[in-house]
Length: 324
Image 1 (cartoon, rainbow, N blue to C red):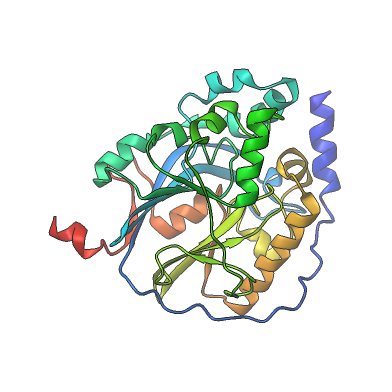
Image 2: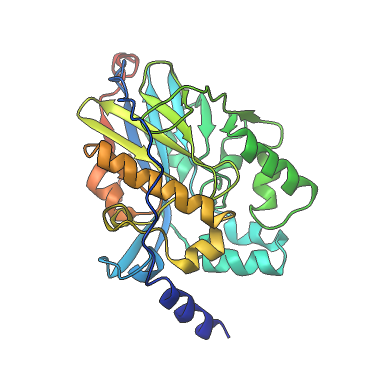
């Protein structure tokens, strides 16, 4: 039956243009106040047809996937943004119910392991991150939570509630092993109701404009996007799974209907958030929009991940790192 479902759902995504986002004032982000370095850890990935990545007729013939962690090195400490796919993911999936195993097999479970998060952190000299910040708790984003056992896990309060609900009665939204691993370490992100770009609330992680988190709820109840301002000339926003391919922004479409059906908790709200990204791009065209699983976009930003021990990095290491 599966071979008949997939083409039908992909065909239904042909007319996928987004409605315009509601008009919203734009608050230009202030310049960053400290030197930072950002490194890409390519923990796993896969290659599928481009039509799986975005709605309508895709430009990309293939969707080259990365399941990535970002390591942000700041004078006030190291921050890990997402943690990629777990090296034990195939064992961890066994706790899922039938539907959960099916969805996992079609999505995160298709990843082939690449780089070890712990080895990459060691190669970078990162010994104790300040926190692990999660865009959301799906398996290919929270997979490394058990590898960072004493590190606080920052996530939106709504995402924390999701984890707590999964601990009580798993629905398969996340892997139970990941929920247990973060149970005692979850810290709600303290958003403040002050505008940033075209968003109504934000959280400035270091208080200097270098790393700013905004709520983009929909893909999961508490999914977030993170603005990373390496320098005034090098700025990007990690948008989690709001979109899968950068071309979605130029083409004004969301993800393919299949991926929306498999992975979005609230597809309509997610589409509204994608429309906000289109609006953001129109107001701030120099800002690089980085989907969490678009490997060519990571390569464009960081260079090829390659096979070396040290992951590729952009920006300037903080003075405390260069002096040590």
